Picture 1 (cartoon, rainbow, N blue to C red):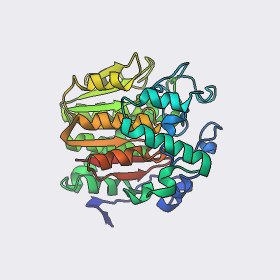
Picture 2: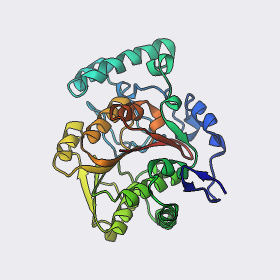
Picture 3: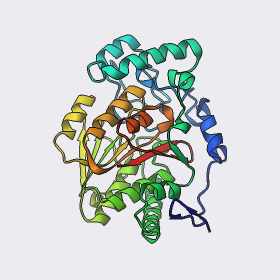
Length: 346
């Protein structure tokens, strides 16, 4: 029996995707499109930090439907990936609209966009360190938790894991009986869910904030953790009303649903100003570089002293890594079945 970062690495029946059995294989694969896994749509290079200027979204790699729309969306932004065309927005016009929110980011992203057009790769990929050199990479969630929560005893982590396995099984069975508005691909993956649940149980945050609800998979994970803790509130942000269909009525006690009618980051930031400091933040909305970078920056400014900063789909750009560096956090990237998630604790 081995020990990873202080966490008992018991034998489990969890199956890793054969495509991602090694970390090296996985992060090499991030340089290629994931078209085979994403409803037949070709994606742009995943290490690019420029999604915020492309006007499009990587629907298949994350649950972007039901999440924040683009900053200056001029048309429908909530169709299924099979039917929604790539939005045609002038990158320069979009950059100008976003500039007041992040003047330090827009120029870099726009130059990077040009570089990708000319050289076939982003500025970061071409001239800077890649994701794998800027964060620790784990293939086992117990290694991630051991590094993030070294003070938590192994038997306590084992308890949280058993609780999570029961919850995850319950959600899977619940999903089989319901007609859901969003694809099952947008669920929170199993290992990511374990880390989120354990952080919520171990840190006992008074406030959890998540962006991008979809069918409510991660919402249930957080709500059940808060109910077990006996205190705390979940603030979930989205732009459409038909989200969270998996959540039962008796789980909604700690739930605060925020529908952003304008769908803008200033609206999101304004609500953050009205709630207590964030003990755990989970990004799973628009994964374009500028949006992700700004959203996590805003959340970071509202974090509690012992807060956790988490994100799904961190392999789509360097946005999460850059935010952690900006906040002087040491992130861990967890390779899950089809994508990677990021976690950091103050």
